[in-house]
Image (cartoon, rainbow, N blue to C red; front, side, top):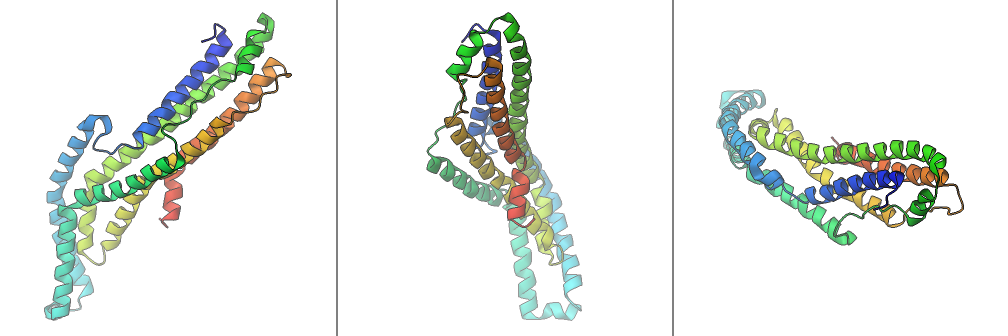
Length: 278
């Protein structure tokens, strides 16, 4: 590493970005069961199991309300086709509450397989590392004290922006895991709504929303892949320009690309929901 403070500041900011991007690349391929060693998952599954009792109670309630609203009279429920339809609905709803966790993990694994396919097809074993161009290092190191003063201000602002953006992005990925845990814990209550025809839209919306959270990983991976392609072709540096101009142009283009990536990651939920019509 260079002994120049300006260069060190920029390299430290890029190191922070690279480490967070590598962490995202690793986290996005993990399941909720493996995240943080699985300690959070064990608590969530315990809560899920406890709420199953509430789900079964709501199952009966939704079923009775559904029968009262869809059947004109009690005599109508005695018809074989109506009775069979109600019986099948009740059994399927009970199965959804009982095996909801397995069904949700099956859906997650299917989408996770899609994410793995995207990563493998792109040919990236890891996210591309950002490296400070040697032309900028040479130009900055050749500056005198007074010439370095504006460089300090530029690198302080640029380094701060890069660091903040890296933490905003990693927080978004962590937030996806929070949403996965929340959906998993509360699933028995919402899945019980399938027992009644009038309330089944609640269950459908829940499944769609859960699938949208899972698909956020695909949008995040695609964003990281596109950014990595930009990183493979670093901004063009004019060796004849002043050091301040070189650093300012480099940081400006770099921060712009990072803002696009962070914006894509932040809007992953909205993009997927629009795709699924939610």
